[in-house]
Image (cartoon, rainbow, N blue to C red):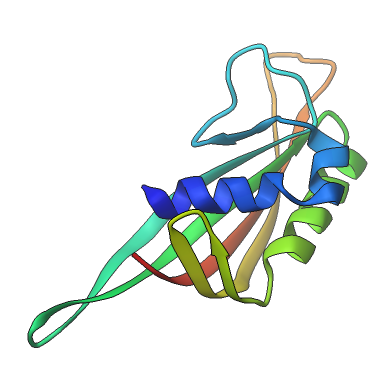
Length: 134
């Protein structure tokens, strides 16, 4: 869990991300009734790496960062700040984790709503490949 927690703290420490979302950066899901824009982060695949003699002290994972906004422009602005902070990160230590590299692998624009809602939430999903120490 250190990877997700430390990545979350690394995002929160960025002045641009902070100016856009404040402290609204959460693991897994937004708390019900929380304000926007916001960011959520979750590991979607991957784990520890092994060699013939056991663990090698590295983790490779795909981490999904979702940028949320009431408007498409707000969500895209947050996603841009997230990508600028994380993409091409190399040899950065945050907490107990050293991020050896982080690369942007995929981006997807979504919106949620329905049932006659007048407003839709916009979600920009950014998937990152992360190699880090355990």
